[in-house]
Length: 208
Length: 208
DNA sequence: GGGTTTTGGTTGAATACCCAATCAACTTTG
DNA sequence: CAAAGTTGATTGGGTATTCAACCAAAACCC
Image 1 (cartoon, chains in turn orange, cyan, purple, green):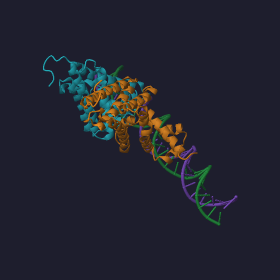
Image 2: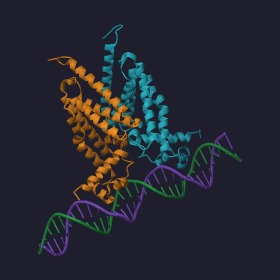
Image 3: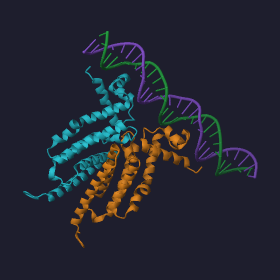
Image 4: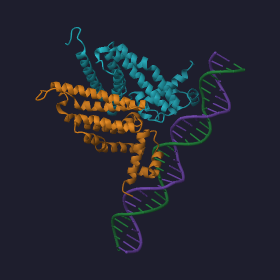
């Protein structure tokens, strides 16, 4: 048996179940059954259920780049296009499950209110890194955005729109609310780009 | 004992606990203790825990107008101002509890993924009514918004921003992300108003 | 190389608690 | 007297977690 193979399997199943059903609704026994592992093994690798949860959040942290950001970056070179490629990536995932799943981090963020400070901290870190990735793209956009634009705040806003849109789509059981939200965000970006263009000294071409 | 007094008390406590701790994390026994009621009484009024949850969601549905929308309406006559008064109302609630609570409907929306279709439907209804309230204000804004504006979609976007902002503020333990999100939304509205103004036939005054 | 110990991992029955829900008896109200 | 509401002990099943025993393979030693 490959080293860490069992631990990996537990982590993978836990991740899936926490995502599908939530933390409290997922019993340890279910994780054991689906991972085909006995309880002793699980508690050999993880102190308790909450540690297991934290391990999944650390996993998300590590895989944010390769799994989430990378596809958007290889989808297009256009920095602002990447923002919307990312949103489209989430849209695909949302649609694939019939609008039942959503964002695993966001779900946990609202299920585990307080009382789990370390979990909250990890969720926060996940959000921070996500937004930092988007912020980098917004920096790359250079003067396509107005110079006074707070790119960190705008990146967080993209996350806001994504999470809020997903929430409504899940409630509605339809992609429409998510699509609507993204469309509004697009309009906002268009307005920003237009404002930036009108401010820019037109070195060439100019408008249209 | 006033008629329905016990039922009301149960409902009130359940509402509070579901909001503070979530649905699964709230035990029926806790509700009983805090409401000072014995189990038989609870199950006399409510078939089971899920029915109790649905009753709280129906309560939110009924009290959306008086508790949520009314304060914003009496805060200002300005229709767009009302949108941001509403957001500020949520901000106050969010800050009061040190960014731990958030929106009770939103929390449930993400905790109860699927598997509770009737609950999901009630959550959806809550969102619909909320957005319908905001949409009415946006209608009242008349030509301050561009004529092509989809006011229903824009109202849903306001909800998107609110829920997404709350989520991040809870994760961060700070009002800053919420404030940032609202500021971006404000900028979007400003852009829309500016676009509407430049389209409008200037019957008087004009700019400045 | 043969034997022994150590290490890293696995087993699964057992534990003690907590959960939502029941119901027959009881009390209060009209 | 009936209807509405309340009681609380009880049920049966689920919960996370523990632990002593077990196992396989590597490491060590003579």
